[in-house]
Every structure is written in structure tokens, then in C-alpha cells.
Image 1 (cartoon, helix red, strand yellow):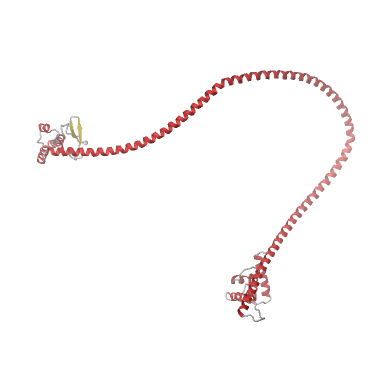
Image 2 (spheres, rainbow, N blue to C red):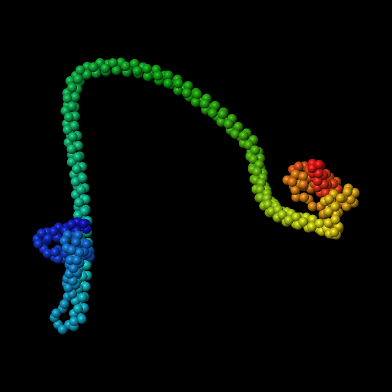
Length: 404
């Protein structure tokens, strides 16, 4: 019996007790007893209220406390005979109560085991009954089918009896027909025996022809086998040198493959070395480029220092002023040469178009200052100072012509 079925049985007991006029507390105590001793559940207000369907939220806890008080009173066993001290009497009572509770627990375990065995036996019995019912249904169905087959067999017997009667009637007429058929078959057999003899004679001649053909086939087979053997020998004689050459070629191919692998490995190593060398070369080139830039800057600074050291500041200012006012002649520029090129400052903008940025170009035989926007040029001059001076003089001359 499942837990729900046991709870339902407890509800029915409580309902019958309520109808017989039992007090609410007794219903609660009975519910506590069944829950604790039969189901092994600690009684709670909700569980007791669910079973009894009566009592308030304050009454049911009081009933449960009264139940536990009765359990504790029942578990205390007093020994009244003899002069036993009060403490020993209480300890003995507690011991007997503990023994009683242990015995009660063991009894519950035994009861649960026996109850489970009964449930298992009941389930097995129910299963056996279901199997017996199934076998009975199968047997009934087999019986019905057997009766149906027996009925069909009976109908078949009746049909066969009627067919036998008809066959007996036909047998008399069939005997005459059979006699005539026997005579006809005897005549046919004689004719067939004669035909068989003729066929035997023909088969004998054919067998002789087949034996001759077999002999000829055997001779042809032996001849062809000898030719095939000779051809195989000739092929082996021709193939052996080819096999030797093939082995040598395979050896050469293996050597070649090994050389290729070695060359690939060496090429890979060379590429790695080349890559490392290229990296070092790039780093060295960058260093050389940086050092070259530094050398160029130092050279320019040295040249400028040398050129500045050629003239005193007063002479340099005088030459720069004469160059800007156009007082230096061709002979003066020829005498100065490139010694005063340090005094030449390239203008940032073209004095003619005011937009272009003049560019100084060095030719084989001199210098030329040119504006890329308006193509204004100084012409090829002997020095930078002359090129700058003529570039500015030409622009001033063109402006004076336009104003006139």
C-alpha cells in the first residue's frame, strides 16, 4: 500500500470516529499516533489538520504537545518495589523507555519489511493473474480458431465426398478412354524406340567426330603452349637487361632525389643566411645613410664657415649691398668667382610673379636660378652670387619697363 493509500485509510478512520461523536482532541491524538507509529512521520499541525479537517491553528499544536507528553509518560517506567534511590529509579525508567523505543523501532522496521514483502507478493500475484488472463485470452482465441478450422475441415470433407462420388461415376467412362490411350501409347513407344536407335547411331558418329576434334585440340594446345613458352623465354631474355637498367635508374633517381633534398636544404640555409645578411646590410645602409647625411651637413657647415672666414663682416656687408643694388659688373663677378657664393641668399619667392619658389640649379659651366611658375630665369652664370643678383636685377628691370 502506498503512502497516499495509507493517508486515505487514516482519513476514513477519522471520518468514522467523527461520525461516532469522538472529541476533536481524540481525533488529533489518533491522527498523531497513525502518523508517528504507522507512517513514521513526525506529526505537524499541517499534517494533522489535513487528516482531521478540524481544529484551529492554536488547538492543533496543543493536541500535538499533549501527544508528545503522553509518549514521554509512557516511556518513563517506574520501579516501585524496594528501596531504590530516586535518581537510579529515573535512570532505570529512562533505560526501559529507551529499550521500549528501540524495540518499537525494530518492530516498525520488521513490519515495514513484512509489509514490503506482502506488497511484492501482491504485485507478483497480480502480475501472475494478468499473465494467466492473457494466456486464457490467447487460449480462448486459439480455441475459437481451432473450432473455425474444424468447421472448415468438415465442409472440406463434405466437398471431397461429393467429388469422390463424381469421380467414381467418371472412372467407368475413363477406363475405356484409358484402354484406347494405352494402345495409342504402345504404338507411339515403338515409333520412339526406332527413333532412339537412329539417334544412337548418329550420336556414335558424333562421338567419334568429337574424339577426333579433342585429339586435334590437344595437339594444337601443346603446339601453342610450346610457342608461348618460347615467347616467355624470349621476353625474359629481353626484359632482364631492362630490369637491370631500371634498377640502375632507380638508384640514380634515389641519388638525384637525395641531391635535390640536400640542395633544397642548402638553398633554404642560403636563403636564411641571405635574409640575415640583407637585414644586416639594410641596417648598415641605414647607418651609412645617417652618417652620410651627417657628413654632408658637416661639409656644408665647414664650407660656409670657410667662406664666411674669407671676408670680414664689413666687406661681406659691402659686397652684399653692391650685389643687391646692381653695382657689381661682369668683371667684378669674374674676379670674385665662387668665393663670395656664401653671401648669396636665394629669395623665398619670385620677385616677378610673387608665387613661385625659385630653384637654384647647377649646370656644367655655372649656376642658374629659375622660377618654376613664371619661368623667370637668371641665365647660366659663373657663381651663385651672380645668378641671384642677375635674377633680382632682371625682375627689377622688367618692373621699371612696365611702369614707364
